[in-house]
Image (tube, rainbow, N blue to C red; front, side, top):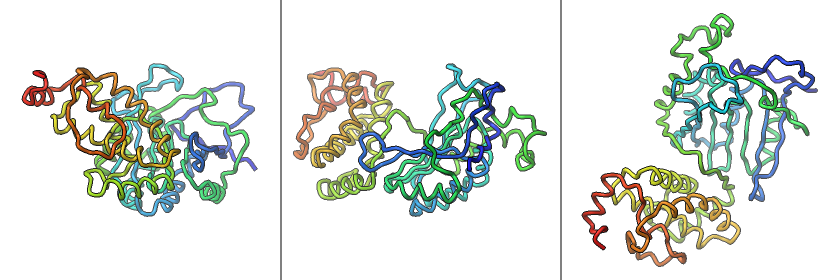
Amino acid sequence: MKVSQILPLGLRRWDDDNHSEICSEGYEFSLLEDCDNAYRFTAVASATKIAAIFKNFARFLNNEAFFILEYYPEESLSLRPSTSAERPTPAVFYSPYMDADLIIRTITPYLERMVHDGFVGFGLANNRKGLELFYSEEKVLTFFTDNHLRITNFLTELNIPSTDHLILPQDFGHDHLSLLSIPRETLPLSLQRYNGEDLNSVCFCEDLTDLLNMYEVEEGLSFFLTRKEQEEISELVKTKLGDHDFAEAEFGGLLLDWSDFVTECEHSFDGDLWEYKQGLKIRDTIQTVIDHAPAPLAGKIISIVNEPDRLFSTILTDRFKRIDHPEDGQLSQERFWYQGIVRNQGSDLRRDLIRSGWFKR
């Protein structure tokens, strides 16, 4: 039997005559592109179930996870049509890996506000386990997993059925509302007890980023590595990299670090020459994995770094000179990232380049 979705307070459908189709609880899933055994689940659930979904999902993460928070740091949360092209882009923050139970305990006092505010999204993930759950500002649940039976059973236990035609809130005209924009007397009693600052998503999300030591990340790079792929990479790193500087780093994190490094260089690299070379070493590490991984996995990693590689190549200048002469003989590919220097150099990098004689060559 279909159960209608109870929408969060921060998502309000427009009044129209086409209510013949309603948003009902349900889910659908499909294989991820370029993954033989990884799935994306999309689910619609009532706002009253979201807290329980997060708390129960945490048990799959093997007591280790990071928290994801998406919100708008600037004061721009007035009532806006969800289709407005002028809406700003939310900032995305990750916590470090930490005990999953600690994350749940920390976010519990904020859960109801995050669920109901129309400008907040949040999630839990463990890349090493190939698992992620995210509840977007559109108030849709997304799961990424390489064990679809686990998530299927999980949703069935919550009485969320599989459906051939999932209707999402964004399929209809709607508005996003902040809790501050909703008349206090219409809020449930559990939210009426908060003052204005506590209901302000800018304030309570900043509290969470402080409590969980979260850092802002660029969302330009999107990929999913299954547990099998990560185990292959981990074994390869142990064999080929030994006591390398990044041998203990999570490979998915290195891919994101390379993308972030390229983005910083595109605008202006503010670090010194040593820090710049550390960024290049991240790409060295990625290339070592590519060179020694099985062909399908190597091809997947190449496709992930293709865009940041292309961008980095376009922002290099003086490419007839090398920034360094690495002695690492493991890499088969000529490392274009050492050929030249980024065009937008901050004062520290430019100072070190002058001292090293770069501009005299």
